[in-house]
Length: 85
Image (cartoon, rainbow, N blue to C red; front, top):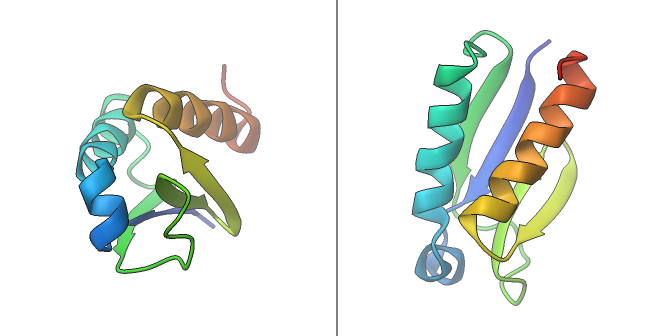
């Protein structure tokens, strides 16, 4: 079963830059040929509006201060989940 990555695109998160996170996550998934193993979706609210940019890896809620931090967190979770380095 593919892992699900959900990025909040609600007003607060969008203002903080989640659109760039979505773009970067899509790039990572494409570059690593993970299209069949990862589903990337947007959500209008993850109910964590006070916590910078919010996203989820499967059911784990994650808040990232910037795109680089989000990408690092995504890559670490993908490596652990898919047993890749």
